[in-house]
Image (cartoon, rainbow, N blue to C red; front, top):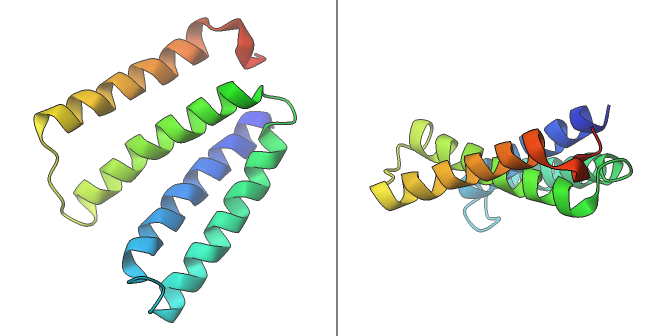
Length: 109
């Protein structure tokens, strides 16, 4: 369940960040409410994930995948462009998350 909780936290963080873009500095009611609800849920599920996954590992995975997925949302939903250095940096983040999950004994597998 620990990785289900972490996955839900990541998805809600990405959704909340996407809604934050649409909230226009919290001047739009529904995107603002969705942002608050999504981040509340995100931290709720993250708090459950870190009961069993070490904080540093959980945070690295949460932040890394959150960055990658948010960047993908920005490209495919908001039609924003990424240059080569941004794509390279995102690829390095993906490699880092894979290294943690495949080789680290700290993940609690």
